[in-house]
Length: 199
Image (cartoon, rainbow, N blue to C red; front, side, top):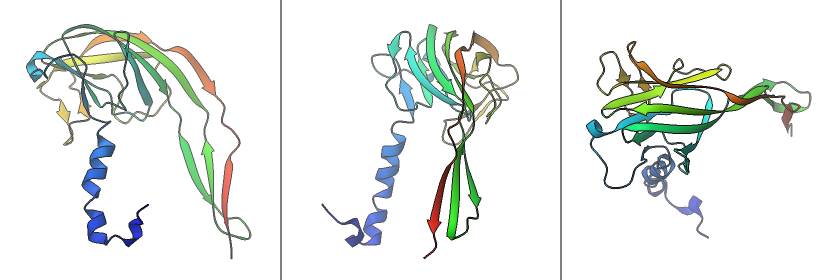
């Protein structure tokens, strides 16, 4: 096995772009139809990011989605059914003082909810879609989850520089809605204490 510590720093830095590309390869725009990639005006795009909720795309039209956290799904025009597993789990890291230790950290998982959504929505060519909740939303799982749609170039809409987040305009319209299913509240385990003993 090669010892990376013996590789000059400049050579190690050369690997960073390759590592970044590998990490991002599972978090990209995903073509969900067969054949060559279509032009933007021929398909619809669904943005799946923009929230602190943990959404895992399970199936599209009954077929498993095996991608790792796709940020944008490219869809053909027509009616689609998307199944999603969701939770709003969060973990807090609390620094505390403990006698005889140089530093201590408590890892505390707060109580959270998990549930499923099965939303049927209509896709139009040349339209962009996104989930209907405030940007960076981190509250309880929505009782009703909707997908909003509007033309790709709708006035008042914007995308970030990496093209993975979409802010919809005020005129975006609902394309499909569904209530949460199988929602349960998970109680947290006891806080876990990690302490570094003083030498």
